[in-house]
Image 1 (tube, rainbow, N blue to C red):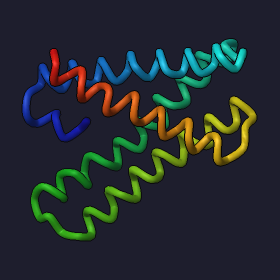
Image 2 (image 1 turned 90 degrees about the vertical axis):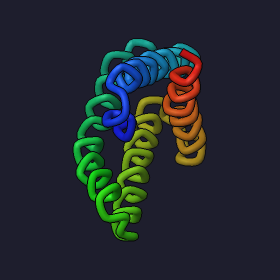
Image 3 (image 1 turned 120 degrees about the horizontal axis):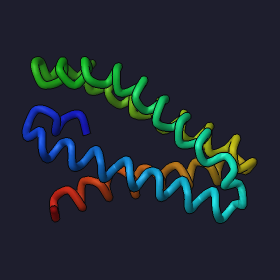
Length: 125
């Protein structure tokens, strides 16, 4: 999502807003189905905080990537995206008390719904 920040600020704001709403809805649905809705505020806060900390590291890498297109910048970007995926997987695993494979699948659904859904809805709007 940070890549859209330089193109059009309105589009970037809309896409970030949609991603946030989709994340809140996904987490709410997941916790409701697991009957752990009492942890909604803690889980959403943890995911938003961790994603923003990782995004602080992603922004310089994206700038480096657009300036030089060095292969090392692609490796760093992939590493940071994997780190974000691992953090979300760990949070989901701990909150739902499920095994690693199930939390990996739920994290994959989380990223598909949140980021690809925000991109698709952002293109429609």
